[in-house]
Image 1 (cartoon, rainbow over the protein chains, first blue to last red):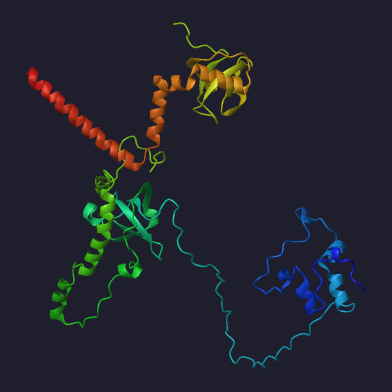
Image 2 (cartoon, rainbow over the protein chains, first blue to last red; image 1 turned 45 degrees about the vertical axis):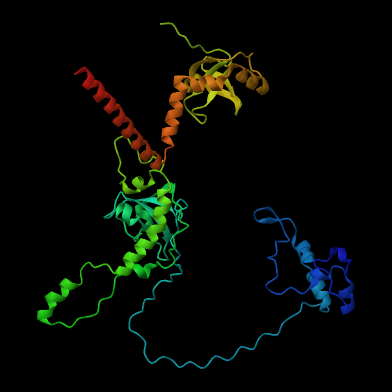
Length: 265
Length: 133
């Protein structure tokens, strides 16, 4: 059985000898494609409209070259031998059947994804905090932590907001940006802000009351130093812009006549 | 109180409703009692109800339904853009647009400027009061 002219072949015919492969000027494109190289194949049968292809079954049979594969194999489609299936080990019948049907929990294929950061929030954006102790404060955004919360700082000297985590939902992003290139925020992550685990104290009645008083309110010195280093670079770039320092020091509030849905932030 | 602004060919009007809200257009023909054919350098010529138009003082010299090139030339000759932007109505609209597009930081800066200006005015007033007292 001969091939029809190679014009109609769906793929170039294989080389018959190694010499041929070397002489062929197109052989560079002919190397056997490793699984990684393959481009995903576009359908050979374009849609006329959804559900109706351009070519009939017989035309598609010819286009896919199944006739050529068969011819190569001597008239029948090449078959693999089935892989020998290892005999499954004999299962013993269970000793115990539960009296009532046991309910299986429903399948949950949801994957946790990192919180999507709003496009308007980029490092250096001035944010307005809307809830909590610092509501109304205008604050500089540093980076998004792996938990999805935003790392933010006042700077502390300007408005009293320390390095803090804030939820994206409780924040308005303004279009004012501060230059944040001099600040290194690599070391801050969620663990830095977690609650410190306290050592368990043995319960002795006399010691109980005294121990409580010692542990209050002392912020460790290294955290204070972190705040200072972050703020030093920030304050320099803030003071470069006129009025920005007093802007960050002032709180935001709605006044008469301001319509939030019409305000441009 | 006679009317001063008439619907006529060449009258510039402001669109006050619809897709082209806020645009200045030229009345290029009158279709019937309610509608005009209206044209502008940046829109396709089309009909508009008179209720969607507010007439302005500006009028240009054109013949009925000119082609776009002639229309643009006539608008340049009459200097519509500058006349509009220097008129008090036009200036008001520009200020309204500017105020609507203000940033939060801009509003803060304006507040500081207002306070400063009021301070200066009050000082002058105090000086004048002292002189007359």
